[in-house]
Length: 270
Image 1 (cartoon, rainbow, N blue to C red):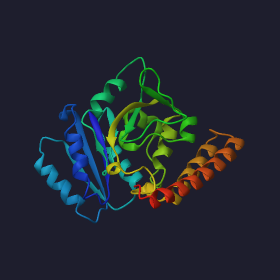
Image 2: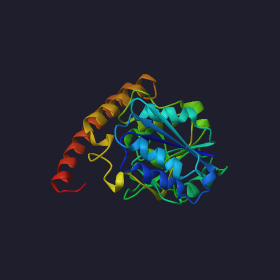
Image 3: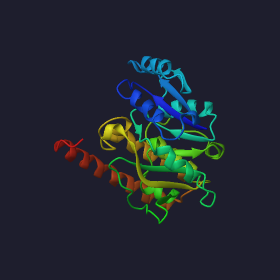
Image 4: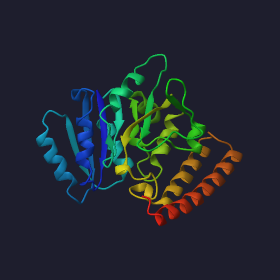
């Protein structure tokens, strides 16, 4: 079974599409359990999901409501309830293409590769340096590559249950760059890959930074990156020289992203 974790906060305009995208998977629907965690929504999100459950009794959907504690805490609530052998993440403003799980699960079940964690491409996004796609159409993810660039958006990810045993859960208190924080922990003990296929629509097709959602707050995203850097240094996964190098690299990257965001907004490109 595949446990699909959907954190939801004020997603009345998108949550139905997200749920439909799971329902419309070419993989058998009886193989899914869907756990929607309502993270203190103040719009009609809760009502929409309640009605969706009534309209689709064939789907196994659990709906949990909690006070607003942030996306990491909401994901953890779902993860602690998940019963599936595989765990898939899906944000409430994203959509899976129908063939997503059918393409990913066989790779996770391929014994000779020993893949524990598998992402994929999202719409209008290419796999960039330092990642390289091999002849098997997969790009390996490693700690060092993650420190340079995070190519893995949460809604693209499916991983094996054993990842939880080794990596634990998301940092409950982290709201920005929280996905990278978790991927870095996963990379310590597990084989991670990106499938070079476009299988997810994120944020309605908007660009991945500076427009909507948490990634729109570039200043807080930068703070999240610096928190992650401090943690890997504290856990002695990097030394002082690399810490300084990454610190400078992230600051330069932040300045570049701010500048690029201003130019794209001025050009009306969202």
